Image 1: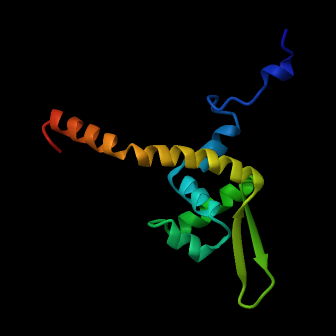
Image 2: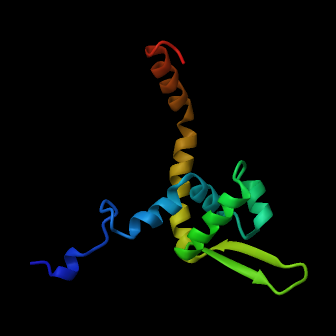
Image 3: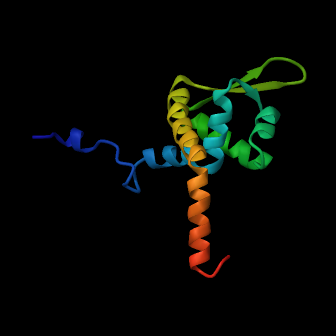
Length: 128
């Protein structure tokens, strides 16, 4: 029979489980794009902002803070003038990102199917 400790495993489907917020940080629009961009290597803030087209400075900053807090991203401030801050994936962040990139590549590879489905859907509802 399972002990109480065994039954207290993390469960992302429970609203109180801390894994839910980590999943949200990693799989949300800006989180997944930020992780994907950092998979290519260490980037400075503005390099990252340019790579993740459309993200605001505020959203990127919030995203990086959340990913750093969850242990997915490492922020490294260089003691130089002007100040330089680099962001890179932690080993855990790399592992998570590899899984995300699999999903991203799968979706990109099936976009013809997605676009066709959207067209069918819109046409069935009177064209949108």
